[in-house]
Image (cartoon, rainbow, N blue to C red):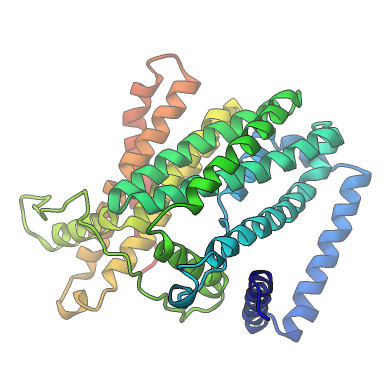
Length: 406
């Protein structure tokens, strides 16, 4: 007789079998024998050497970098419920769906605990030798990471269900900023003591049941959960398979907040201005592109705030390169749309439009990053002084990176 627990574990086995089949498409026995196994042996050998004696370059890795890496881990993945579209025909109006979701929550707890232990375990030689973290601190760090990720996942799911369009993007960005500030604040204080970390664990584990009850009782969330499950299931396949095409979302699109009336950005109508306007509007109307853009800017700002003085300037320079290159890839894809190939464009116009679009799109984010750098590196006038400097450097990045490639 089929029970909820049997159904749940059958779906878990099917999930892992599917992910294993995706891995086998990319890693056959030749790749495993000559690439994967030697790489694992090489990494394991050096990992053991790091335990015996820490290398000299450990001293050049700030503790803040470890905190940022751990925070990035908390933003990968979410709570899995293992729901399927067919459940709405039979199970939706029964208690089975709620019990399936509860099993998914406990499964996610265990899975995140294992992955958190693995991530922290990779950094243990550095944490133990360079920062002298005790085993108690390491244990509290892992518990905090798991509790934080599970709680944050529930908050993100609630925001994605409640809001749509640009409001969802704003809510996700606000949550990301609050999560980054709170996570980094707790982890950075754990270097010297364990009290704040333990208190944060207790607070998160206390508020999690309340958030879980609200999440499970949320009405009208079934199709959102199905869409999320499909996305999580196909993440690895989307990376492994170049020809993978994601199923179109059933959630209706909303009007974009920016450039919804399609007014002209430039007075003169030239090929350069037309292509530039198309790229700028396409970028700021794209929810996916804007989400990545905002997250990159926030990560760069947060990293600059916690890095040492010399590291702030390196990150500021690197953030300009990163933003320019990311935007250049988007603008290049816009230029390869089949519709645009119906018209004759001068090669010089395409190149100038690409550089102009990269500069206009990256400028707001890079100005914000520069303002953060000026605030922490100089007195009160630093943010104002860094504004023209960031604009000039951003223009140089756009001219340089936009000129390379097709």
